[in-house]
Amino acid sequence: MSVSPESIDLSTQRALSEWLPARLAEEQPSILVIGDVMLDGWWSGSIERLCREAPAPVVDIQSRESVPGGAANTAMNLAALGAKVSVAGIIGTDDAGEDLRRQLSAAGIDVRHLQTHPDMVTTTKIRISSGGQVMLRLDDSARTVPADALAALAASVGAAVEPQDAVLVCDYGTGVVDGPVRAALAGVLAGAPGGGERPLVVVDAHDPRPWAALQPDLVTPNAQETARLLDRKLPEGQERVEAVGAESEAVLQGTGARAVVVTLDRDGTVLLTPDGVRHRTWARPAAEKQASGAGDTFVAALTLARSAGLPLTASLDLAQAAADVVVHQPGTSVCSTAQLSRYLKAFADTALGGDELQHQVELHRAQGQRIVLTNGCFDVLHSGHTRYLNQAKQLGDILVVALNSDDSVRRLKGAGRPINNMADRAAVVAALSCVDYVTVFDTPTATPLIQRLQPEVYAKGGDYTPEMLAETAAVEEYGGRVAILDYVAERSTTAVVKRIRDGEGAASPVN
Image (tube, rainbow, N blue to C red; front, side, top):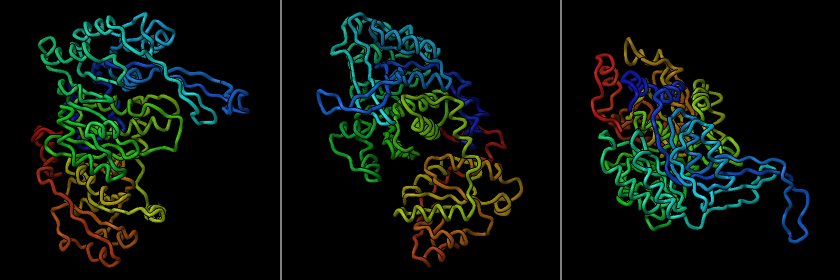
């Protein structure tokens, strides 16, 4: 399944516009989530005394909430984003199992392949909090999964997979998808179910190595899981990103995947592919809250976008935006199509004026952060732009993108340009997770803005040299550095515009 050619053209130009989540939801891709379904409990109350038996606080419970967790939370996120979702797993006949099945069904999720067994304990995670702080978590799960329950789930895999556009494995290590289930899934995916094409296969597992035989399209380990896979400790911050990138071949071989997205919590994500293509996303974290399940939201949005045909890098940025939505919400939360659209719409008026931008830059610099500035038209956004902006971000801490005004673009590019007006261009660029601030300038060069902001690094694409840039003298005058980044010649805006106007398709596959 893929979005229509017209929508693909538009998504190339305006990858993260507010209409995109609704357009993806219209595709209604069929997605199977198979793995460890759980029930999350959120109990909150007040603490006014210690118990008599021990120096432990007494929480007087005032509210109780139960919501699907684990693979079930991933399924809920997919349903909220518009997918047709089926879930496969094993639950007990206990109250938690009945509650979980009821909530999934109420969300429109197909639970025919959710196996129930009387000797199974439905996995529950109850968080007890007071005053917005989680004090304790109680986990309850089966020590062993009944063999006949595993056999029943394995027997249902063929029927569960056959009608799907994507299969998403959520393996939290409880044993539900071990042994016969994994073997059955590998067997079904080895041949195209029903004579059709193989579905998209995404693996989100605590240990992705046992799933390498599936040759998944995407694997999404976090930093700890990646460290275990590599059998080494990873550093923190930017050094961690660089360490993961340096080990891309080992990560890809260990997972058997076509592409790996390593999630790094507050540091966003990094994409690893066999051809060396890397893409970064940067998280916009909220203050610490009772939030859980952002990783489930991320992999759900990523799977939805890819199964609907969105390019991989755009899918990553969309998934990061969805994760940013839920970290601002308490409890185990989901991101809906409407919420994601509102979040992206918020970037529509984000171009800052000179005074406000200078104020923000001064605040960041006072915190010891390095400012990177780049500028350009960014009229029809393409992969060359996003790769370039990701590289620019990695030169410092805060990336400011200065856009040529509409009049300036016309002076530079001629009649008929820009294709997208200033507000649209600003909204799209601001929505990229690597971009911190967007501003607009109308002067012949960016020199006046550089003199005002004095960024530590001024970055430009590799079709220039420092000597060619009118801005170099201004940067060097205050001791800044000019950085020339990679230039991707085949990713020309002019070439993209020509293909659109000539009614041509893509020149080559886009990752």
